Length: 357
Image 1 (cartoon, rainbow, N blue to C red):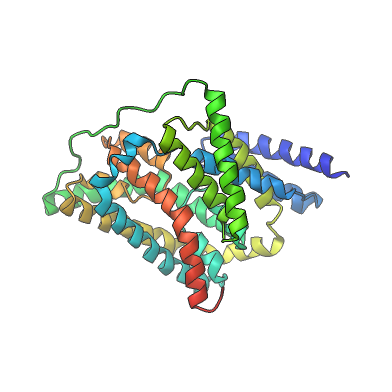
Image 2: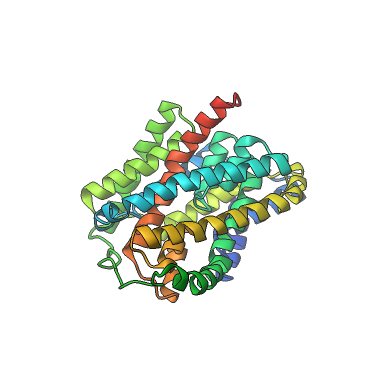
């Protein structure tokens, strides 16, 4: 079977299964569906091929999309939450190291894979960076899916229960006066041109990062260059279909790497995944209480600001809990960018210190 036919079959399967799970409203449904479809195709029929440019396009598209998530109006909010941002960044990294230790010792995973299993990044973005640095992406995807689903489906209930008990005892409000951004930025004039320019910036960043030769450099600088372009012009534009394409291509790249050995290893992950969930729950509650007491945030807002779910999902869930806050969105966008840009470089330093790099 020719490579072109294989690629067309893989794309068709990835899109079909991904669309199905997307319609079922599974978090990250397009990505997870693409991965599952390709895993079955690869293991069942021994069809597994993805050219290297698949990953590069996925990195460019994802970097462009994330680079457009923070606007000038949100940047103006950063001084108001600089304390919580710094505390949560340090806390997330320490939590990541602690949870990774559990994956390493209990499940017998290598250190790099363990670190990415606990990384508080995006469901689509984390496997891309993990793949670039040589981690076992199938295992990383499984752990990240558990984190994302827990953050969306279960943690809000924990937040409400903790708020009911702790808000009166701490003497802090559950919610504060609404603090909304001006609204979602409309599609810019000449949207196609702005999309092309945004992708051009991300592409230049990807090649620059690849040239530097640092871990995850292509993705990191694609994001940074797109972010700079967006903040400079306030017209950066990356529509959601770009992210869907990135998810399909990422799913194919990841799915062909999932082996029978990795599937067997995943059964050993249940105990460390429980540790991961407990760790994120305690972190969420403790940080939320600290933010409410020291930084004049509502308790629900404080806890949701360090939820391990995605920025978009948390914002939607928060609105249903009477929490509408620009600070919440800024903290999550900053958390995602920090996790995807800073943490992989810190992982490299950590591995070098341990003599594993």
